[in-house]
Length: 198
Ligand SMILES: [Zn+2]
Image (cartoon, rainbow, N blue to C red):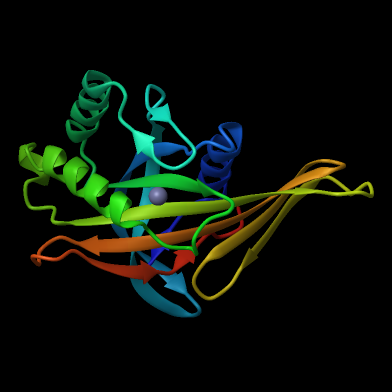
């Protein structure tokens, strides 16, 4: 199942990732299942409703730690008391990254997050997760460039070029992964990302 993100929401996710570059950003989002038209066909998608960064997370270049466990619990408890249908997460990988994929550490980390969320009655049956991954590369130009955003979606991933100043840009690939924890060994599948123009 593909993931559907409003353009303004995608922009705020990208901005939070750039803000902490070259450390990783880390957060969770609320989602619901809706129908949307994709290339002329009505399909069920996971709609990203709302995103919450972990501001207290201790962020290091190689991984994300929950530096403050009680703050993590507070965020999760407030999220799980809403009427969301699904909880997923997002984080970033600053360049150089080893391909656009989740690490084994990411999957172990998500498994723990999901375990915590499943303690809530509303989510005790959630055994799958969607992780949005932003892979970010900083580019320096020798010659002046025009500033602005450029979005290029391909069939699966979303690609952005953010020229934040005449000499600096960030190239970001936004990918989505389903992780199925119903089996003994978690299975990871890449999903399509749709960011319609607003
Ligand atoms: Zn990661």
